[in-house]
Image (cartoon, rainbow, N blue to C red):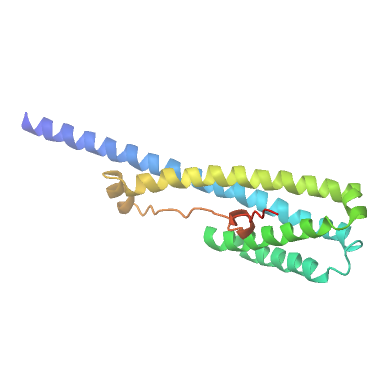
Length: 186
């Protein structure tokens, strides 16, 4: 009789451990899926930049510093494509900042602002930026769910036993977005 009870407890514990393991696998796959979504959107943005620069260069040829900043930031973002989320976020943040300066500088050129090709690229870039934000939110939610399960008891016992680790969040550091605007009263 006691043997059956012990066997029953062992079976229940094993089934519970299997359920935890499967939950961890599912959450890890969701993190990977989320990262894949971010990667696709970041590549789409990177692919838009050469055509945007070609459109802008004729109007803004003497804005060499701004154009070079975008080109260099794009090269850095491309080089960081296989890096960690933290490395990738730093490179993409620089690219976002450089693109923001490019668009702000373009405001000084009425002919460029009226150019339909430029407007189409600007709209496409905004669409991609929105997609990046949606992908980032999905990814970070999946990371949160995985990290909670990896750190919570008793699932942390299974996680540690099978080599599950916390994932990194993906936060784009864009100083322009975080800056507090200065309001001056005349």
